[in-house]
Length: 336
Image 1 (cartoon, rainbow, N blue to C red):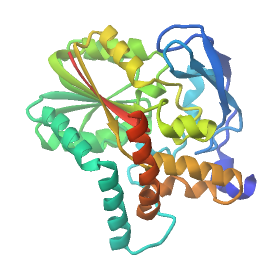
Image 2: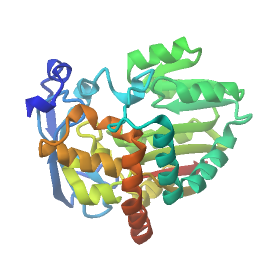
Image 3: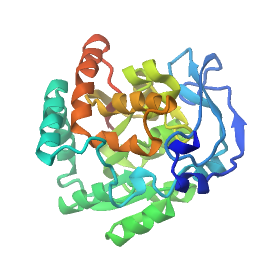
């Protein structure tokens, strides 16, 4: 295995205290079945194995053997994508730029990406004259930069001190993830909140959704995105599913259950839209190639930018979307 792992990854391995969980984080049911054992394929922050179970009541995948919350920070490498100021993705095949872009445009056309982007633009119209907005899980702050240009007063929340330092440097207000932060923003009356691939990292997702709801103004919008445990890559690849991202993803909640949770948190209107992408299916397939010694682990993340491979993966993904109505990721717009 070591010939496929970068030396940098091996240097930063941690020993992490773990705990056993028998109750689904999304619905509270104790009725579940073993789904897979997994480890940190992406960053190799630890060599420990963790376990996921599937809730028989709501379909949520939750870590039944997981890092204790006080130590999960050890699972976030300095190279962790959302916290990085610049993307380091590199295509596997070194095609001319025009050819890579052409392949990607063809993949987007096959998948119906244009319709999805129209919906995203409609959601982001909520930013215009929104006043105060919150990006929970703000990473390096790129989204907040865009919101600020639209006239918003911006607040970024993240658990990473390094990410918050970068966001503050960009001129945004920042707060860490803490109980004091929720108390501080309770009366903000936010018009727009974004949670981009955050809910799957939470140890108490319903409680956090309620805190966010309480900090929002009537008619305010929450835009949330998350990996889909009912999608084709999860179903086919299990422990090698890109979206599993063990052990950072604590619970992966299917669309129907997340809608129930949002309504329970107090949101009046909930709209769910599947994101038509092929890159997660592609990278899940690539993990299996790594297991067989045919690819290097350090090359897999970069496949997201490989237009040719995304084009090849677009056809099976379109078929899966047509047959099941489920993609590898989905988005939610919830209105208070």
